[in-house]
Amino acid sequence: MLNRLMATLLLSWSLTGCAGNTNTNTNTNSGLADAYAGQFLIGTAVKSSTLMSALPDNNAPECREFNAFTAENAMKWQHVQPQPGAYSFVMADQLIQLAQRCDGQVIGHTLVWHQQTPAWVFEDDAGQAVSREVLLSRLREHIFTLVGRYKGQVRGWDVVNEALNDDGTLRDTPWRRIIGDDYIEYAFKYARQADPSAQLYYNDYNLYKAQKVAGAVRLVKQLARQDIHVDAVGMQGHYSLDYPALSDVEQSIIRLIEAGTNVAITELDVTVLPLPDNAHTGADITQNFTAHPVYDPYVEGLPPARQQLLADKYAALFSLFLNYAEHINRVTLWGTTDGDSWRNNWPIRGRTDYPLLLDRKGNPKAAYHGVVGLVNAAH
Image (cartoon, rainbow, N blue to C red; front, side, top):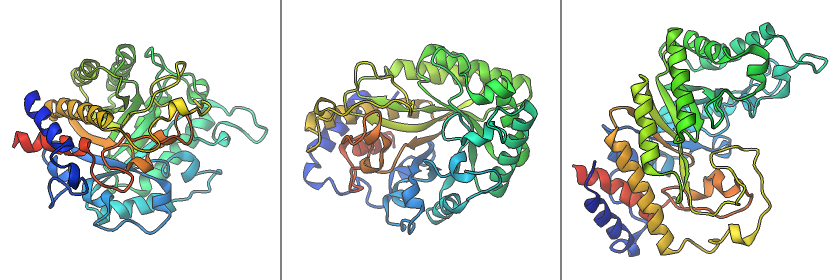
């Protein structure tokens, strides 16, 4: 583990010594991805609005800081195939072009999910549930069309997203109800057939919880028994200043490695805002609470003490990731700047959150300097 005293000194410097020059990268010749070269890829989620306008240039934060690109929504079923056979690849094509411009990798997100999948996928013309055979056929056709289009251009795919409950059991979804528990097996088989060279991932939130990661381990082993290798399990890092405990994240990483797979940190952000008492952690997009000033306390800016806590949290997380870098292939921030983050609207719309490493203008924050400082210190 990296020397914690060194990390603390670096963080103190980032909050004090560079306070008058926060718009300057600690390394004027490189960004986050360059700093972590040889460790793991550093990714970002790209918003649909970015992919529907002129692409960022080489000096923009997307190109400057990152070398892995995931579409936040553009490759999900509702955007790629909103109606039967009516495919739209405009935004997905733009993502490929962005990655090429920025000399980065593309991560496909996501092939199978119970959210953001049109109702027609599961229904016949009368609105009744289709048969297992029909749904498997639709699944295969969709995967072969999407994955096949980008064969050789996408590093890896989130094949199945959020299929587990927090207790580790399989979530009750239309995929499972119609096809059965083996829908996950078929999704991975189809993806492997569509692009034999692509990496294949399972992706989920709250995998720092013991029961849920146990479910992910069972899934990886069950697929292995069917000769299906999961290249990595994506641990969605939708975290808070208050959770999770670093030891819980570490134990989950260890358990997944012991199960024979690698790990990707796929959707990292750290909210600084309070949650309603009855809100669930994780990323259940169906949660929606009424706005109230008590849940949006930093509209005018994040106080220095909270900046320090955010920097401490990110430094602790990246120290852990570095310790297991041999088995972590990617750390993806879920957004590029604070203004891009979905956290501003989840689980309460219209809040002002500060969950990422770049501020709303794309400038490095104290947390950014601390994260870069970790690898600088190691060298």
